[in-house]
Image (cartoon, rainbow over all chains, first blue to last red; front, side, top):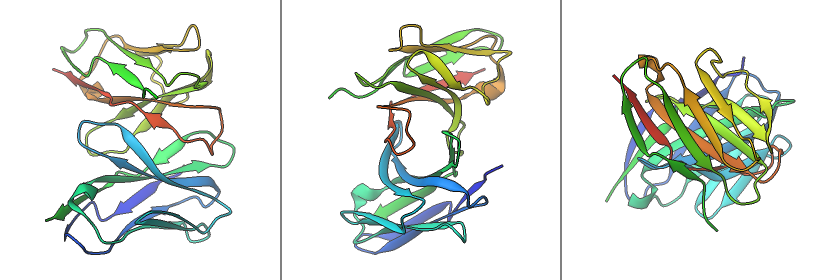
Length: 112
Length: 115
């Protein structure tokens, strides 16, 4: 059974800092990995999707990397802003399954 | 483009009562998902539809939960009877096709409190 772990559970940084969020998964036979953002009282917004054959994806100030063999992914946020404050969730889909398995998330607070 | 709509946004019921949630996906999206998100956890898939057919309901507690998508558009999720442990946010999502590379678009969720 796939398990997804996100570390740290919570993170507080001053505005302008670069930061890294970590995600690990137990079964390396994945189809893809996604990073989502969740704001309080709202649904999830997809940020980046990395196919299993890819190593990284970039969107603006966000960069996600994937090391499938070691079961790890990182989300790098450059020059953090207060508007980046949210919970960031990592999710993987297994080969042959349409199910997404989510981690518990990292709650990020960017202090002005 | 209108997003995924869900109602109600909040619901408080007593245990053993029944409750129903409604979801209207993005127009033209063939695939619809219902997730359960317990406080402090990531979402867990309950059921997935492709048009009006069920693709995966392996994690749906079928003794008390049911879902339908009769015309392949909007969907309802029902809990009967509710238990305390059903307190959670119920998220609906949709995607254009049944394809893992397709982005899932999430609604705002329904927060259920069972007393």
